[in-house]
Amino acid sequence: MRIKVLGSAAGGGFPQWNCNCRHCKSLRAGTFNGRARTQTQVAVSHDACAWFLLNASPDLRLQIEAMPILHPRNAERDSPIFGVLLTSGDIDQIAGLLSLRELQSFRVYCTASIRRILREDNSVFAMLNRVPNQVLWTEIGSDKSFSLMTVAGHDSGISCTVFSLGSCYPAYVSRHRLAGLNPEDALLGAVLTSSGKRFAYMPAVPEVDDSLLRRLEETDLLLFDGTFWSDDELIRVQGSGSTAREMGHIPVSGTEGSLRKLAALQHPRKVFVHLNNTNPMLDESGPEYREVRAAGWEIAADGWSLEL
Image (tube, rainbow, N blue to C red; front, side, top):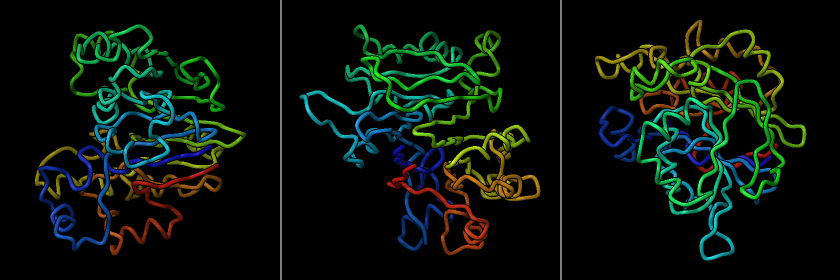
């Protein structure tokens, strides 16, 4: 399985357009010991020919242009991107679908609840179905395995199992709509399998329990939620706001943080992704970065290529 990290930041990217925090300010000034990042986006392929996106970030068009293997190849209108797997309805995960509206056929894999939100409540997404078979919507369910298929119905060589990680839907979903949605459809983790190798993708994780730990120990590569270093990070930087846990992200540090909770994992290669611009792990000269690396974790960066 080939894995491309097209983007590695949380919503807003790094630097964020309206943020003048110490990190963003020093990055713009060229004095920050770290790198700029676009919003989290990953692509996977079994054969380097048929590619599938894991979510669709707002930066998707630029991310595709920055990765030549995703460029058109043959016909005047062409793309090696055959599908998109959605793990939630968050704006950072779905907005990029609108960048794929130019009448190129592809599949969207999502839960029934996310499909209803996008297709029944948001008329702008009708741009994805202006002509027959423009986008083929495929409903997926928790703990059910399915194959990622090309538009023509050919097996890509990658199978996927998704499972519920949380029950909170984005704030833009109306109360009326929430009453009819399945809580298990709100937020998914995904394990993709190809040639016997397993890749777990979880850019947003509210909590880690024993069942998740057992699932992750069976994988070979883990890209995990690294949004916030501490639970009160935004409050300390901005003077107000929500905690990491209130936003649906387990913090990295602390006795109940992911660094401690996942310390016992032995088998998978462990990589943090989806870093917020306030996260001190971005500073490669800082103690937080060194602590993470010393614990055996890596921090994903835009442009990474991985292979299983």
